[in-house]
Length: 417
Image (cartoon, rainbow, N blue to C red; front, side, top):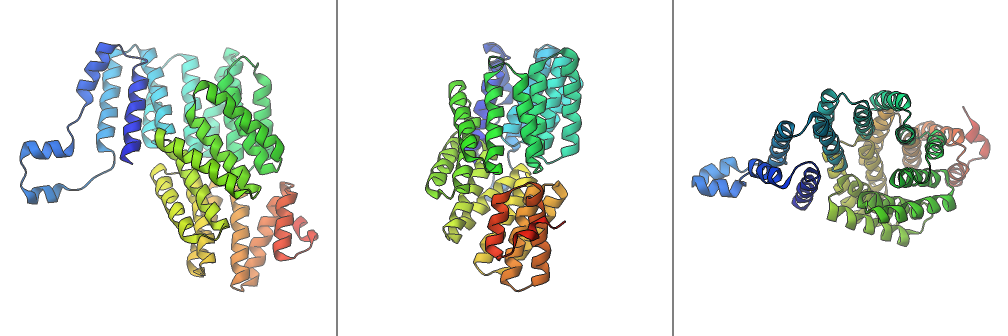
């Protein structure tokens, strides 16, 4: 994790160089540099017993102090408008590194400190993204609607397209994939090809993910590969890493596990080098699911536990719920049925709280498999019905067929209400 921390410091410095002159940067660095723990101990010549008493770490304590001092310094040295824009971009940087609590503080401060309408809308969009990552759907929708109102008044088609894109991601995270697809397609229709190549690539990438889930594999791979080519041109390695993960997921759905593993490995390599913790977490989970598919349960458990560690660090409840589901599957295959039930019920509870219909359906299916194996037919039927009803509503014929094959049930069951 130390390597990841150092990468955040590098990204922070690169961001600040866009707003501060060389003398200002030098002055800031002299103010925010902190003596490390070992150096302090040596200067104080502490007795060994005192060293032992003080030998405890509280996460990235130094990092937080540096950020606080950076905000104080830039507020004094930048114009109000530049300071607000710096706060927004610093907030976005923190989001990309999984520092959501700090990002929330920075964006709130930006929202209070700017009077420019376009800048305010940009702040609201960043807030919407932040809330969505924390599965706070209502707050996310409120923020994006406020941003859309401002962009509409300004006749800013690019801003409106960004709003539609975020609304689409919210629908997607909630399992409403047809609604998500409609939003992404609307977002693309608003933009001209030359307007914002990176935004267009992002929307196409999102469409690729939706097409994976809807079972349209050819459309998915076209969208994803096209997006990767665009992001390579702009040097956006964060999005490239995310797309490598999505392509890995596509290969996994197609049971091409060798190609899936290769894509996940490429994703992990980029994420580690650039400190992209959120996508690293997803790639670890992807590897865990791959190892489950090949019955390598010890390796699956190791990757799932590492993903769980990162997801708690990120406070990413959606991913935590997904990891609990995977750990439940691992425990079921290891015949640890009590642990399996606990993990799967925890996953189901979180997904119900987060209103994620797809994950509710997937976890309900896994509970049905578990209860079938341990011969608890009433609970099996309850969760099987919940799963089939969702897939019937989504018209997901492939998933319904898979469930019918596993449980040897007739097709009429899937239309139950």
